[in-house]
Length: 148
Image (cartoon, rainbow, N blue to C red; front, side):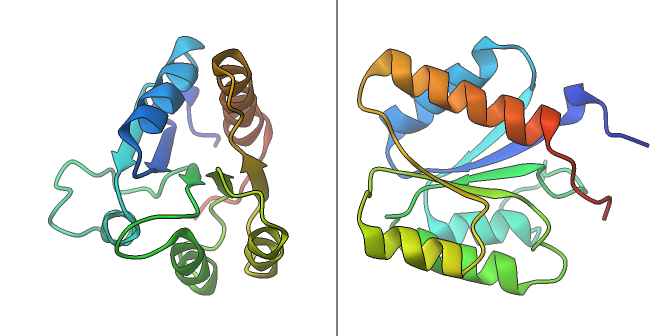
């Protein structure tokens, strides 16, 4: 049975509070999700995904989508991606790298490790909102992932 849209969860891994707020607003503007969890670094992302006591309100199910920044404190986005895609219980979760890095080597490494999409953050506000909304519509409403 498909999960109702209302219970969809997105894990947003972003160290920049302004970018995190813009991303959350863009996703919430379209009313297709009611839960976005924001963590500020790679270590927090893994703690969340593995059910650490730091996140007592964490749902039992993994998120439907992970929006992952490339350059993060403590553990960078590449290391977080590497661990997610190496873990049988997590590797089915779509990971979209949403980053300011347009370096070819970063793009190549992310795809080598199994990222599902690599998007360079648009600078213009309206383009940013349009891009993030499109990510949400596709990865949460259109894309299908196996039940785990």
